[in-house]
Image 1: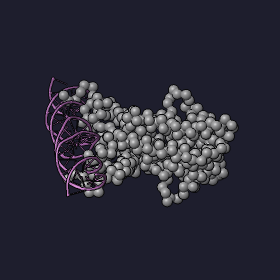
Image 2: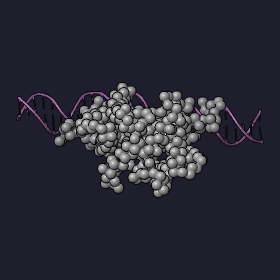
Image 3: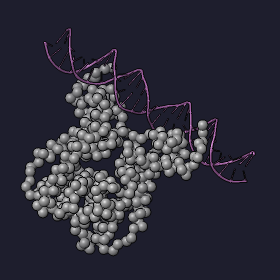
Image 4: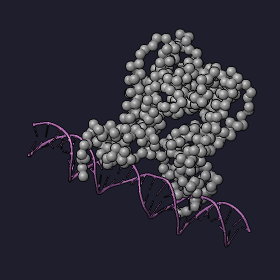
Length: 194
Length: 194
DNA sequence: TGATTATCTGAACACCTGTTCAGATCAAGC
DNA sequence: GCTTGATCTGAACAGGTGTTCAGATAATCA
């Protein structure tokens, strides 16, 4: 056997990335073999190498794609003027964006140590850029007296850690709706910095 | 060759656990082989099986030991009376305890998915018991009007996620001392719930 | 229809995986 | 000093790892 009926890179390519995303998120990068990914796609392992140079690139591309999506989506959000409105917009955007793609979020946090040093540096830079947006909001707000924060860098990390926590328990269709979750977390963020 | 000079289970046993802890924390459970652990201990892979029935038990014992330590240490903390004092004591204890053993903390969060279902249930039960202590504090405080929280369960998870975030950036000997870190986080927690 | 290109298979490569165990050597107790 | 039990080695087992590639087949275009 060889090329199979109906095979096309426009179909197989996305399916490879989807399978890798789901399997990496569920079992972890190191625990998932190329043969397991191929099985999910319905193809032999060798065929995966038409879509990625190696396993490491598969992971890196998923993570880089996620971070690019994050920064792009953030840049297209409407700009707010007041310090409080800016912080609220960031908090709600963060929750909404992250709850929409839990697998990519999970991978981007859990699999950092499985990146090569070069790839790690790229992802870390993107992450710092995103965190920098929140820190700017906090610093600007503090400078005009709207926020009371002891340390903008640590407050940035504390807020992001808190918001990321949503992904560990939220399930759509559960007890709380997305707007309710946004409201609860925004309330805590607001009180923590004022 | 066979038994080596100076070999003793009281020495090798702890070294096996220490090596596994360090390697699992750095590279992840799935990415670390028994031969790699043995190399760190200075022994052949087969010798590890004098100290653990299998690799899975090695991971589970580390995680269970960590959770036991956590609950024991917590139970020996002095009991506070006021709602605010109880919450402050919990927050400071959590930060202090977790910063003292970053590797065990890291493993206990990252390697949950590599536990067998039975082992996972045990660890999850211990975790829920610990989180329950914080939720009780929040609920009691809300009932007497000391705290204003929209949802005690979610607030519990949000606070713990925020406090856990310390481990991602804190390095002893860094810019901030442990008491300073405790104070900053306690300030944010206090404001978030009042 | 025929030639070309895209896509996949199946086998192979060298090496690594967790685990077992007979046998060898050391430490401890009499 | 000798015996007993604890501790480790080294080899083996069956199977899995990422990756490569010649060859086969399907899709595509002239």
